[in-house]
Length: 400
Image (cartoon, rainbow, N blue to C red; front, side):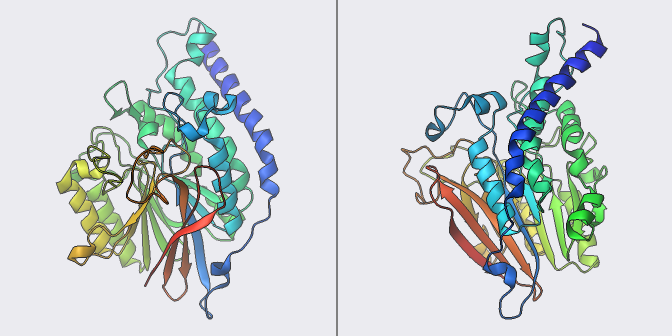
């Protein structure tokens, strides 16, 4: 099969899947946007911005959560926990969140998104990693599209399932970084849409190739690690699995970026990445090894030094569980790590596990952040249990 025919087949398959779900998902676009008490301000303290964050919605047909069985034909094919993801999206949108940072693993991915060697049959093409990546991206984009039209801008964060290949030793691949930009790049950043939604644009955007020599990165990090200012706050997205430096934060670039934000007088700093800086050990012996940036403690500590120094808050996923912690509280640290890898992927904690926080360790959870004019910031975690019970507030903290 020639290259033209191959690309035609790929485009038809991806477009057909995206269109089919996009038409079905339009029903969510008409849901009214509500307001919770935070949006009215407290005692004359106006709200400057409300945003939310969650991650990890991809399904795993080989190891699904038992509470999701039997998988629907839709989720088994498109590899998404559609029921959990769409409920979270509807609730976030109804809360009035202007931004939703999605902290990676929105697709199963985990292959290598290169042109397959075998293009002799349609079946060979359709089963290739390249087509699997593109159609999973297309389905996820179809799910989130209605909320972009009703007031919540989606800000994507790369996860290991987007950039790594499992067969190649869970290592990031340049082909997968290219596929990320091809499928998510238009969101990073669409200032025209920002203006249409909010009457204001993101400013001081740094979305180009932000590699710093000291980080030792070999591939273009455009739209993988990036930052911008909006409504008086500074937002930073980091790629925690760049090619050749898996499970590492780009510390040198981040230091430069945060220093520049401070020089501009930005009052609040929020950092988003896929892998946690501090693994949440939710049960005795579980996980059995560090799952995030703490695979390299020296590098992790350099990253967290920056988070503390600039008074930032770090939001992450990767572990399919909820947890909020101040890792250095005992030594005087104040910064929070907010782990919300609980957007629909199979829970890390099994139903039979005896865990540290049984009331929340199997909860589909996200965080909504309200920034007030006074400088106060409220982080409110919300969620619903694995039986899809009522949505409730899990934890709320106020930063001054």
